Each structure stands twice: as C-alpha cells, then as structure tokens.
Length: 447
Image (tube, rainbow, N blue to C red; front, side, top):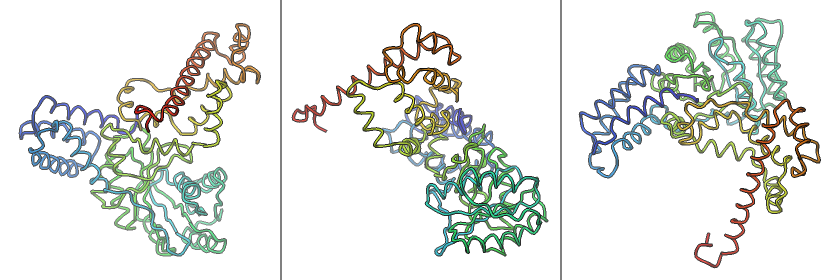
C-alpha cells in the first residue's frame, strides 16, 4: 500500500502485546521489544542500530511507571515515535546555499541509484519551490545516453543543461560548466557525475578530483532505498572519500523495507535531505524525520496532505464553485475540473498513505491509480450542453454516451446517480453553512 507498510504492520502487532496490561513491566516490555527488534531487522535496519534503538526505548518506557493514566500501548507508540525521529536526525536539514551565489551542488552515487533523474527533480524543485535559477551540468561521460537523458529532463522542466558531448574529461567539463553558469547569471549549479555498478578506485578518484576542482557548497549522495543495508555500506564508502553533506533516498515509493532510511543517519552521521517518491519530475520531498516517523507508525502525514491540497487550491475557482453550489448549478464541467485538481495532487496510493487511519482501513484494498479514467471518458463523451445541464441526459443520451466512452449504460447510470447524490449533499451543506451564519446571535451560531 505505501512505503514501509510491512514494518508498520509488524510494529503495530508488537504494540498490541501490551494491550490489556495496566502498566509497563520488565516482562511485558521485554516481549514487546523483542517483536520491535525483529520488525526492524526484517526491514533491513542495521543490527547495532536496531539493538541500540530497542535498548533506549526499553529504558525510557521503564522509567515512565508514574504515568498511570496512559495506556502502555499508547505510551510505547509515543516513546518509539520520539526515538524514531531522533534516529533519523531529529529535524529537517536544508541544503547549504552559498552566501554569494552561485551555489554549486555535486551529485554522487552508484549507477542505477536514480542520480541523473534526481538531479533533474532537484533542479525543478529549486526552480518551482525555492525561486532559484538552476543550471544542470552533465559530467557522466561514461554511461551511454546519460547526457541525452539529462538533456531530455532539462527540456521537460525548462532548465538549461551544460554538456560537452564528445569529451571524456569530467573534471574539465565540471569546471567549465561552473564558469559558464557564473557568466550566465545562474544562482544554482547542479553537477551530475558518473556512477558505477560498484564502488571502485577509478570512480572515487574522479569524483574526488571534481570536488577539488569546483569546491562545491553541497555534496549529495544519492542511493536507492530499496537496497537496504547495502545502501548504508555504499554511503560509508563514499563518505570516507567525499565527506558529503547529505543523503538522498530514491525509490521510497516502492516496496521498501525501510532499513536505509532508519540506519543511514546513525551509521554515517549525515542527514537525509531529500527523498524520491515516484517517476514524475515533481515526485521529490524534503525529508522531515517527524513526518517519516509518523508514517512508519501508521499515523499518516496530514501536514503533507494539507500542503498538497494548498498547492492545488485556487481561491478564485473556489469562490466561483461556491456561487454555483449556492444556486444548485454545479455541473459535469465543474466536476471534471475538481477531478483534475485531485489528479494534480499526485498518486492516489500516496495520498491515502498520508491520511491517519485510512491507510490501515484500506490495507487489503487494491487502489486503482486509473480510477478516474472511465469517469473522464464518460464526461468527455457528453456534449457541452449535456455537461452543463445534466438533467437533460435521458435514456437515449445515456446509451450514446456509454457507446462513445467505451463503458456500459450501467456505468453511466451509476455515475449519474453518484453525481446527483453529491449535488444533493452539497446543497444541504450550503444550507447548513448559511444557517450557521444567520444564527450568529444565538449560542449555537457562535464561531
């Protein structure tokens, strides 16, 4: 269903062993922590990290006997939540932006970690969310089509790529790329470097030489989160040579066991700064340890959900819809525009994972990412007149719409019924809303 779902289930199962107990004791805490440690090790968390985490939680739980009113299970969740946050670094860590631009960011990592794609995502993020003017520099001179890949990404997001097609001199290209960026007034320069299938001396020497030549403000190590403990080992090898500033975990939307996210900070002592959560160019998030801890414990990430909604929120559009609802004029064109807004918010599975409790309730339900496709097809098969006046859609029109959208009359009828019920509910809500405002002078009308 979502990132770390397996770990989440196992932790919940461990906390259940405390249900029915009046307080935490040496015996019941030992049983619970045995389950927690097993869950962490199954998620490919580093053994020493898992042991240290469990010892700390146990010590803190036993020291809290005085809180008689708090159920042991809930107390354990709270202690684990606090310790998970500490384990993953405590607070969000920002990129080291140069006091005088440009900021030079050097990307490092193995081949296949998603480094080139992430370079594009980061450039796009800094452009759209931080109002920066980034330049991408293509220094992966070995992998066939790496430069073309970066150029294609650059075109998609409207960001220039500096490249020297037929040269193998990565250090020189990096230096000239930075000079070019400075001369053209770019305030952020992102250098994509070559990866290898494994850590080797030649690769390390080259990236160390690039670091020395361009003196970056920020070095990011990009690693595939799905490789678990291997990700942590690779991070250590890179850190010894580069002394990087932060980690980027990619592919966190997959069936990730979560070990890398939970171990990397403790082992390498470098913060996770960003996570990659999908294929699209906006599928990038800053890393917040508290929000990740919340999701690991099945508590969702409501802050992120609200942010996503706000990003798509259009005040003018909201007012226009309010007027239409008041007059009971909400139609299929309005409905379609609302669907588009929801789709812009990202993956439905990911959105569900952000809502506390919903993820658990729908655990065994297969979420269809194309759930809206047949609805859109039905609405697109209507004439403009039908979309604006749903009440004129009679039997023969429904047959025509079904045929045109490749759906059945039954599906069209179902959508019409749902739409009608939604309109009635919205009308009722509008009435209640205006009633609340007109009763301001009465106790139940106060804000």
